[in-house]
Image 1 (cartoon, one colour):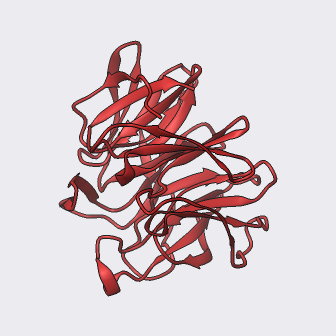
Image 2: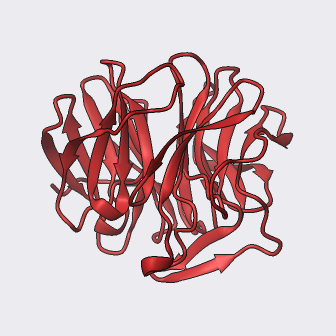
Length: 279
């Protein structure tokens, strides 16, 4: 379905991770320029400059912004990556309201490099996040991803090894955890065990091969999942049924979404824009 979009910010590098802040602004990251910005009332302000490459972002239990930093990879165009100089170890970062930031997590388990991608707050107040690991390596060299858990002290434990490219994730109202696998064009549902290692998940929804699930959120009785390279946003019922496909335009690459002020806000990676449309 084609919708009317309002462009709020443009000329961005590769935006991701929109978050509605309590002051009415919408914060987002810019992987290519390694910055966190916020838009409000026609103005875009800088919140922080970070090393590496900030990726997914959420408000944490303490009200600070928590950011997945993939270590330094940022798409410059389809098939083209910019590598930060220097790269850093993949991690979660904490960004306080005064603009100060710190590395929140300790060492991450599993094969290296770790490339944290997106995160969500657990019912217990911890952070579960996806780590697609060495996704920049094509073919047989890619060793798959994992789900990780960061406790309140930043200590990280592994929840499960995963195939494909684990990306966006959220908690369903029934308490289960849903994770999008970009390279497999599907969503997997896990029974949440309070932070204990997860059993093998079950496929919750599979979409067409042109849709690569990226960042996603739940709002009311709908789930909204950005489709990145497919230039679409999927609207999904809580029963796992596709309701609508929102077309964002050729080459836009929608990376992530949030809801604010009755509108769906979308970061368009390759278009370099923050846009919104009525929910």
